[in-house]
Length: 166
Length: 361
Image (cartoon, rainbow over all chains, first blue to last red; front, side):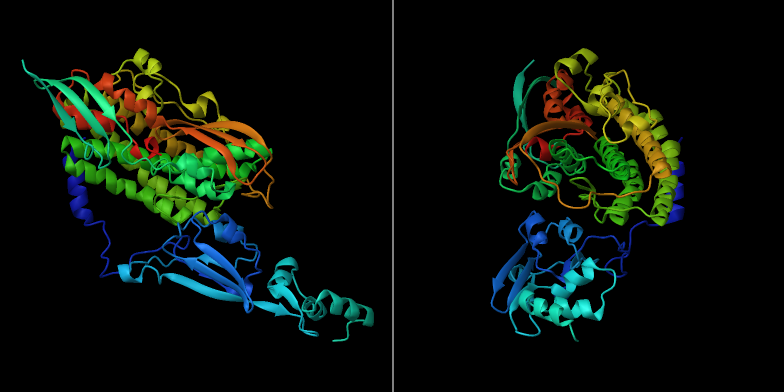
């Protein structure tokens, strides 16, 4: 077969490139772009930090809560964090617009604080993301369960014995 | 006639990657070749001993760009062998799909570059344009055009629902006629391709055995050593495909093997998509990885990839060692380039589908 046929076909079909930056190129839904983090859904298990091959995810435990940071320039967009996150608090968006000036390279990071959960009765520290864990563990959550989950073990014991009046 | 030496490289021989050739030439003919590697050595084998088993899945994917799926898959197979993990059947099908998508894109890239070196730019552009179908498949199904991040220990990280299976079949329906009806016949019959590639860079079957050559380079000389057939992994034993071989052992034969394998891979993809069983695509939970050692091998686009893993019960490998297909194939250039014309050197180098990235891990 002659290549002329292919050439004629290609001339008729027109260019196969997209008009970027004058037109928006198509980005598939599965595209692994910039990492996004939802502090409200995080349980503080730090699995994402463990599996991150580039060390792009760092956690730092402070008085006001668990500080989360992701360095987008280190991120390899491999999707390990999203795959292994039990509550899907971390995910990869379709955003690939990551071009930036050299001077901005250390600013290309996102921070968030996962607040410490406090016992609603005595105010004791009961870790992180208790609501997120309960939502992850049970299909539906009764108000009573929700109430008990927000108590420290001592207050929960006391509340259980009393019949957990809400 | 005068003999003299010319340096080729370390930049720009067919691919813009560093490899240094010192050629002893006798007029227009090559008398001897000396190859010097090591310009971009990255020490990845050592780095794997400083990272945990999960981090290493992503690190091994960076060993090679065009075989990037074969490395994490083979690595995961060694971990799974040590931990005694049974990979779900659906995950094994999904692994084969990922593998074959990568193989089609890799082979198309190599045959496109052949046209580019010959100077047939319009054919180069045509093959690359057809390859975009597979690039779009990678981006749409896996989320990236090169590093598809499909594998994890105990399965895969991507899912195919019915709509995506149907879309993937559509893409294969778009690609197959271009390969079978346009591209393969052009490489088989076009005069400018044939005159530059037939009888060039010849290596015989016996030399292939002696040099331990693998992949399409060996199969172009009639040496059938496809790991998918000889030591089937995943679900290759249940799939129907031919191992493509040619007999002449020249640049053209190696290109024809790759074009034939593209067609076989499309057939494998169709079978996998039709047979794809229901079930989990990865293991739930978190496996413990005890002390032990294991070897696994797969057929990467460039040939056999072998991984050896030794663990000591900690969270990191004690030793991870791999053998890549390009490593042996480089050495065969000495045979292929003997008495070749200087102008054919880029074509011969490209015909082994050289991967400096994995040679220089």
